[in-house]
Length: 193
Image (cartoon, rainbow, N blue to C red; front, side, top):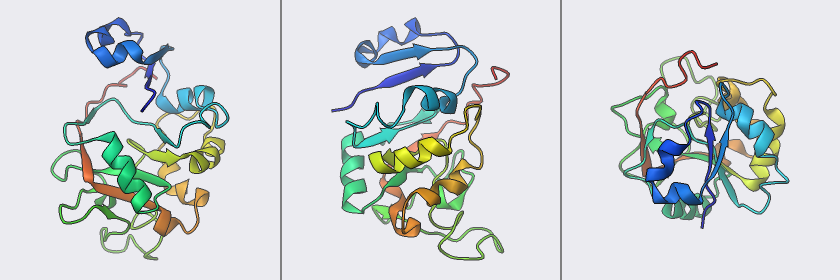
């Protein structure tokens, strides 16, 4: 039920042949580029319009506890337009908002460090997902795609602007705790860019 598109920034494509699913995937390879460069050029909203959701994930994510179909069911159930899986709380965590909560399916707000949340409905305490593993609805992606600069590298700061693409953002952006991932924190881009 998914089309997998792999963007290779390191020129290594045949190494993926050992995985059966990779033989059905679309591989695009341009050296020294990043996922946002690829997304801007290859994921135009009109091209991906047949898809309900667009996953734009980094390559250093552990997905042993993640099922994409169950994830989509929860996203629909909770009315999320922009989301991400919860992150394992003991590894690679930057924001409290993205931390997996073991006692719920989804969360849409959190407490951060003292003084960081001047308003409870704005990032990083609500209406926020991290840029490493976002999932966008078709409509949200159309808006986000227009936000992406042609030369965007890491996407830092984009996560704070995503709320401009859905209303009310604090209800339509959230973290799916029941389907979670582990950020391996492998600095793979290195000096590629």
